[in-house]
Image 1 (cartoon, rainbow, N blue to C red):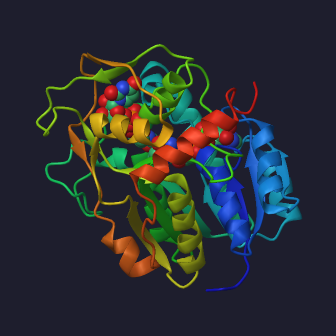
Image 2: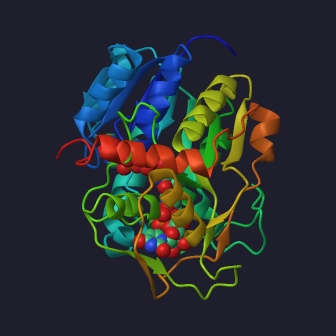
Length: 341
Ligand code: NAD
Ligand code: WQD
């Protein structure tokens, strides 16, 4: 579209949101962040300002706080919302399902209601490959059957369905659902990156913490899967590529009335052992690991067919696994304590 837009980024202080803010600003758009900082640090917003040289508006608010959200919408004339805000830990969602349903679903409903009131009907939503459940074949296409195995995944699937219903009732809405595969890596400046609380659940943050000596050893969750080396295969995607996908999605949203659904992945699958090897090469560090039991809920092989995003958005991933590992490591080395809390 090429026209500058004013965009509300919910969850903009988080991992993917912060990288997306940088790419949106680089593409000439104006960004306003709302985040309650439940899984992020205000320092990330300062870093976005540092990288871009722009003074971005930040609002510390929960998306379910109607009063604060109305004020933000009242003060700004938004063209669109990119909606990252949500809780995302699969294991935790099984222990605290209600918390996930309230935060992710109720929070989003309040926000959508306010969007409607202020006539902001363009939304890009963070969905996930988790909505494909256990895929029967790979690569995964957008029209594959959907199913979920945990409350986190259910929040994504339910919100996808809710957004489609909203469009059905009012065709003025433009909804883009982006299903991310496995985002890793960090901005090349080393100023923003993934900063999980406590012991990481995900592979790359765990590896970087082993590499830096904060954790002693990586548990590889089983090597008896039906893959070449027996470890699970995933479609890792550089977070900056993912961020660029949001820029492309937001720039096409007004031209594309309706509901659009895109996989954002590279189309390449890497096993856990291949990721370890690539990380060792990129970092020059050895990663001690041991083979452990399978983790409940893991699927053997998952990678995307992202040709639809290429065809319709003109987007495709540029970075390979080497750059993903290099940039994850660069972020960790430059910020041994993450954002410092
Ligand atoms: P993140 O936790 O780093 O970012 C989410 C942000 O939302 C955090 O800053 C958090 O403080 C904020 N937040 C949460 N609930 C909020 C609320 N009620 N009100 C206001 N702010 C709130 O996570 P991320 O990795 O950047 O993920 C962003 C989105 O992408 C999430 O919706 C997540 O489910 C989705 N997603 C992530 C992955 C992944 O592997 N990281 C994969 C697929 C989809
Ligand atoms: C990757 C591989 C593990 C940690 C999760 C969510 C998914 C999406 C992305 C949000 C798997 C193995 C991991 C470890 C290991 N998030 N592993 N040792 O599970 O593919 O996807 O994040 O939507 O919904 O489920 O990512 O990074 O946890 O695991 O061996 O200590 O690494 O078994 O094969 P996953 P992950």
